[in-house]
Image 1 (cartoon, rainbow, N blue to C red):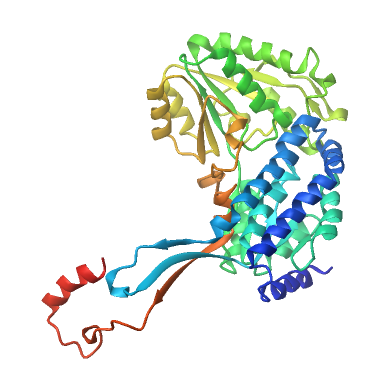
Image 2 (cartoon, one colour):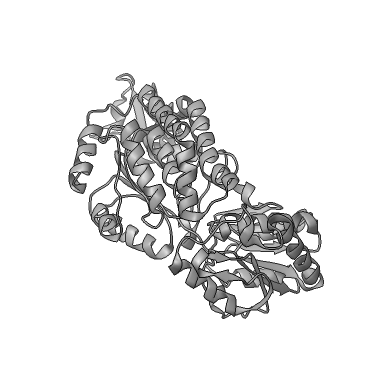
Length: 459
């Protein structure tokens, strides 16, 4: 279908109000769940073809996560959609003041390639729940997943409600030229600026889920064995191609060697002597990204890993030390299985390093000391902060997820997704009673009296 016609068809369908009843939204969410359950094997296969995703990672990071998000939304949607009553000031008595969530209308969802199924459909859960129509633009860099989604969506949804547009830059630019009512983009900050500029021409609100250099601070007051396992898991899951992966490690000089040794040991425990042979270790998405990440290996001393094979798009789990602050690896998001280890003298030293970079998506800290935790929480700015864990920061649907500054804007997951894709409409419902004449011209009361009266009637 021609792109503009697809968008116009959705606008026309939304205007019929058929998407607004809660029963309709619940049924569409059930349809999405059925799509996933009916084709779980096909989804896992596509993810393996695109990223060589291990079965467990494909399920926990994509399929299973989505099923939980849908179930959580099904359970709570009626309550979220009720809105909430506010205190009504005396001037509007008798009356009622409340906020009612209404759908925006037509939504464009643009997803990345690193979690090509989950990051396309998790926002869709919120869009459906809020009562919007949606056009999905999957990443062409994950072609097998993109093609699968494009083939499945029409089997479960009417195109005037949800449709998929495959393609590359040209198709995305054309979609961005339409006056969508809301745009949700996940990806890098360069493209995010293009999205925001295009949206500004139509005054379209946007949510931008980006990335950044997520610091991981370890202190002497941490359990180093647990810390090493959490960091290795968080960094090398999906071969490091995760927006919330620790980007660089800050460790006290006094325990740098000990933690490095534990990380080396943990990597071996996770993936064996040769991670390339491990069924639990993924691959880089394509040759362009392989080349970029491989070049970053030159920016420090390799103390573990460092092996690459272009034909297999394989880069081993790698630890780097002696990394200069002005090295390329410290100037861009790594988005691969390479972890720079940087020694610091004290927390103030670590904080000064963190503050050299734009606000990250998440700050990690491993410490048993609540005073240290409080200091980091108060003196850093990020989308979120996670103590003594990494990937489990995203587990569950109750915690809003999103960035700040260069790492994005807008929060989603769970109720936050419903709120993100809804316009909070302010409503005053007032009776015809109690309309004192002093409120209207010609004004007959002294200003001094009105000043006193105003404080009371406004509440």
